[in-house]
Figure 1 (tube, rainbow, N blue to C red):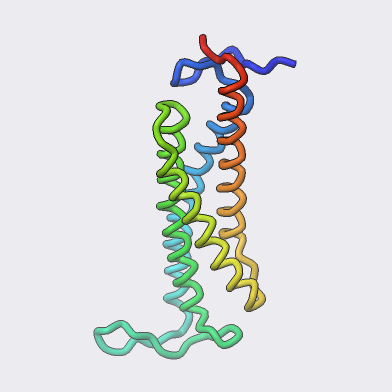
Figure 2 (cartoon, rainbow, N blue to C red):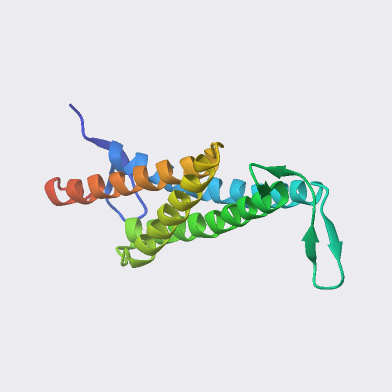
Length: 166
């Protein structure tokens, strides 16, 4: 079975199927980060239309739609915050992942971003499932972060076992 493709990466090493897949996954992390930023705007906009009334200049909201004892607007604002954090963290993951992949830099930024994504997504997913709702955004966050982690480990092992020098 052919392991090495005929293309050469930005680091001067041959691109294997695993290295190509990691490259695509990191690009996907950037795209997902941008989609999450758009989700931030959408959820914040939806929260505005939930019937809450703002009093005074403190922007304290009262009333509005509720779901199982929680204000819907508050849930949507928290979802917007999760989307914003996911967007920032996936862009950091993308950048630090490529810096490790092609420039042999430290994986610290990648690890920090990945752990933050997983923790935030797990906490929020646990909460929304506990009130009877499913959040696909947190699930996608978890799956994408885990798959990128697995492929980074596979590429790391592959680089130690196969001579990829041109």
